[in-house]
Structures are given as C-alpha cells and as structure tokens.
Length: 133
Image 1: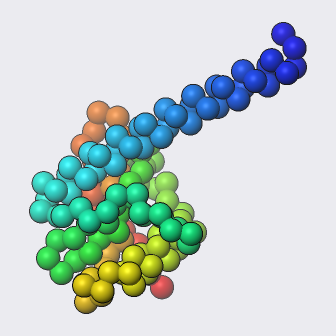
Image 2 (image 1 turned 135 degrees about the vertical axis):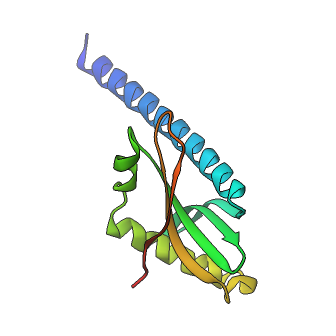
C-alpha cells in the first residue's frame, strides 16, 4: 500500500470517527432536552453558536435561564468532569451575547448547568455546575 493511499485511509477513518462522535453528541443533546422538558423547562435554543463561543442548550423555567453544556462519555462520572474552565468561559461569553440580543430575558437569573450523558444511563442534570466570575 502506498503512503498516499495509507494517508487517505487514515483521513477516512478520522472522518468516520468524527461523524460517529457528532451523532452521539446530537443524540445526547436530544435526550438532555427531553429530560429538561420533563422537569418543566422550556428549550429556547439548541446549539447556539456565535464567534465568542457556543451553548448546547438554553432553557428557561420561571425566572431561571439555564445555559446547559451537554457531555457524552463512556460513563456519567467522566462526562461530569469533561468540561474545563476555558470552555465555561466561552459558554459565559456566548451567554452574554444571547441575553444581550434578547431584551426580554435580561431580568432572569442565570445558571450554568451540565447534562452528563453515558450509554444506557439516564442523563444526569447538574444544576449550577459553574459560576461566572
């Protein structure tokens, strides 16, 4: 097998792995949104993306506006611990943009939550997982 063909095959394998990871992530976001709805939240946005960051789910219940990061890993514990400070900062910047562009939400209480997902497990909702500085 030539080097060019080997490199092409590696690219295809990486591409297939990326597609599978994206599919698992979308499925996890779907189930996370379902759990939030069952808990009485209204999903305002999914996959909110701006130049400064992105938010998987934006949900509201009463006066609370929850910015939810969904993580899918092999087990719930790993999913809970998969978010680093720099990711939270990007989520916070995106949240600032979102609220600034929605005048009716500026009086709401903000919260940053995690939805930890794993195979064959009910998603775990961790409320107020991170505080903005």
